[in-house]
Image (cartoon, rainbow, N blue to C red; front, side, top):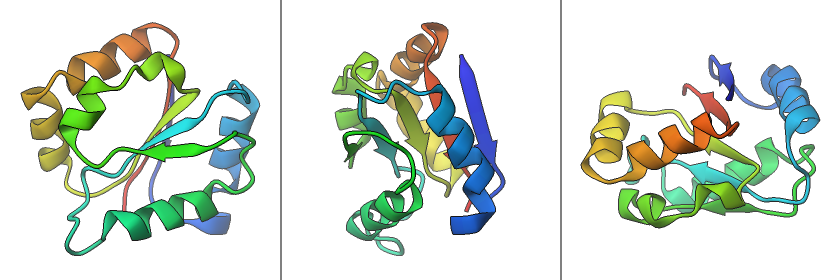
Amino acid sequence: MQLILCGGGDGEQNTQANQRLNEIIDHTKPILYIPLAMDEIEHPYDECYEWIKEELRNVDVPSIKMVRTFEELASENLEEYTALFIGGGNTYKLLLGLKQTMAFNNIKNYLNNNGIIISKKF
């Protein structure tokens, strides 16, 4: 299990975290972006996706996939991803959604199998 926790910000503020991520990932697998803690009305997920692509532009991965619902996250085979990027927002909303679906257990199993998670607070 490897966790990279960032206190917020973007761009240059996260250079070291992104460099560390780039050092430890499997560069043949995509990253899964999870923006589900965000209020989609205030921060539309399409805009979040454009942001994450820019934020991780120096991380060498073939692609970044984004989930839009907790149900979609619960159905994902997380082992197909080099890392999970959990965006900031409402932690209570995120935890509730994860626990109401199998997503919580999937993430827990992913971590227990040497998964990598990077998380940011907004």
